[in-house]
Image (cartoon, rainbow, N blue to C red; front, side, top):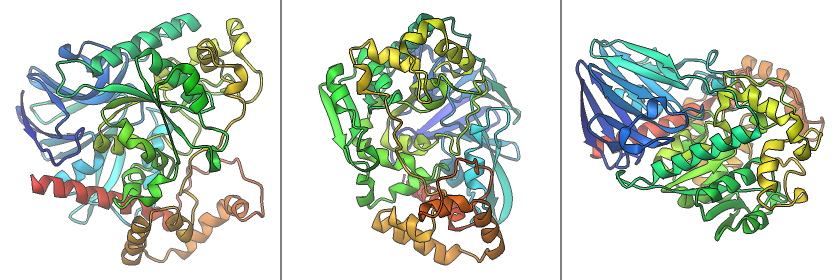
Length: 495
């Protein structure tokens, strides 16, 4: 197998698409994809950069591929906040780290009438065995499917055949010391890998921070990795009591970025589409406040800390099964454009989650347990032992972010920038069809949510995540996907 690479500076810095045709793999990529003789990669891992052994690394935050004789081995990260996409046409195989680059490259289109995109894209929350492995798209008006893989390696041969190989699960952690030492070792190696002089771009480290559990823990670990910058939201709105600037000061951060969470509302670049296209219909958009800071850095976030580190977790498992509507995919597309390495810290060693929960409930961790419904002893111990007082964080669970998932048209548009809202409204005028009975049926099933929003019912805690929203929400992902496909098409054509 021979690797031929073609740099396209119009593409996002970290985006790539590979075409495997016989014994030739042609790679089209952005300017910060590292391409060596026998491998290419975006991201960083717990290992030496020059060896390129990310496919079997314990901690890999990125994607890439490597030549192995007559085969090429592609690799996903060792977490599940993004994966790889595959489309086969006759004996030619296309692989990419962006669904929409793959679609633009192969001439595929979104199906504006399909109501299941949000559920399908977020189905990885059901675990690596049960997620929807095919994404419905159109080719010349005909329904076809793009395959998606998570936590796996993809082996493609010159004969046009491929196999998906699941990555190995992590060895159970023995106790807190064992977990913490392995976590720190992996994170230091990740930092060294990202800053390696042999890369075409070196990455620093920044962290998010709040007054909860997960972000302060990220900030402690990031500081030990050499970070000097931490980002937190201003104390207003949903973040009124969640600003982490005082904790950052106590941890010794020199550069503390405090910004409002609604800065995105002034954008004129259809920023919302870059997040919504992933299937996550909201929360990540607020992180746009810090994208200029994230650029060129490994960014530590607390994704899934509410599950992995929860002492009361009822279903710890080794398959990435989470009880939530969304799958934390919000940054999967945007990171490619902003040019940063997304590092969801709590997902380190997550296939050994049962052992992490066991540690959280162990005798040695009682000193750092509150024995209430908001109890995460592991991050509490890490943060308290760094000098932060118990009452300064992890006291009250804060509600942050938002979702369009159960919004109606006017509410969706109101929570978009003016330019984006007008564009989505125009899309609806061109594509929306009348779905009276299916929409009424959906509204009946989830009526408690809507009644609570107008003050006639208390918020429901029921899980409606498997019910297709057939109202205008169904058009959000196709609208956003069309935007991304067109952006990629322009980048391909302009080169």
